[in-house]
Image (cartoon, rainbow, N blue to C red; front, side, top):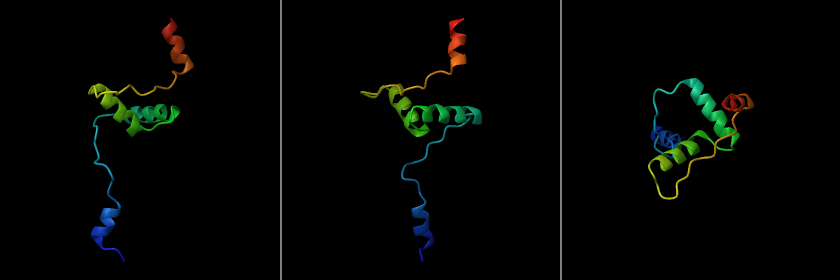
Length: 77
């Protein structure tokens, strides 16, 4: 049987958690869907945005998914 401390160690995150407050659930869901649409995830996209914003050498903006057709049509008007 494992001790309480060993059990806690097994369930710790590998990386320090960062919290971004005040983001509505709808935006989180849309962001997750957009990241998934380009074969990525929220953490990877966020990390790349932070690297680009901080002007890290070689950093590039992450790929964005194509806009839905209705949204594309609205920009043409």
